[in-house]
Image 1 (cartoon, rainbow, N blue to C red):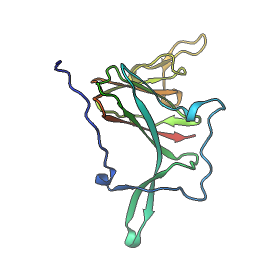
Image 2: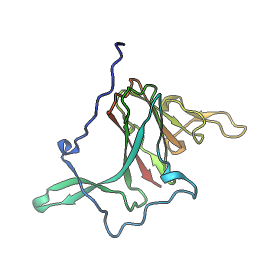
Image 3: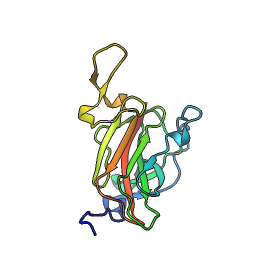
Length: 188
C-alpha cells in the first residue's frame, strides 16, 4: 500500500461559529438572477477523477436577526431570492460513492450569471485553487491569472473578470468520503 494520505470525511459544523441554518428568505427579496437559457443549473459543478464522483451545491445567504436587548443572531438561509449586493455562500459537496479512492479529483464551478467572486473566499481541503477569466479555457492561480483582450497587451485579471473557480485536490478522495469546497460571490 502506498504512503499517500486520503482525504477523510469532512464534517462542517457552522453552529461552532455561532451560525445556524434555516430555510426560507425574506419575502421582499427579488427572485435570484437566472442564467442564460441552456446553462445547466446556474453553472452546476463538474467533478472529474479516476472514479465516480457525486456533487451537490448548497447556495445560502447569511442573515442577521435582531433579538431583544441589542443582541444579534446569524443564520444561513436558502438563497431563493437574491438582491443586488447580496453576498451568496456556495458549498459544493463532492462525494466518492465508490469502494476505491478517487485520485486526481478536479472540481470546476462556473460562476452563476451576474455573480462576482469575492476575493480570497475559495477554500477546500488540501486543494489547489485556480480561476479562469476566459470561460473555462485556461486556469491559473489568482496572482498569475491574466486577461487577453483582442489585440491588447495582457493585463492582470480582477475578480470581476473571473468566470470559473477550480479546485484540484492534492490527495485522493477516500471511499465514502465527502469534501466540502466553498466560495462566496456577490450579485452585481
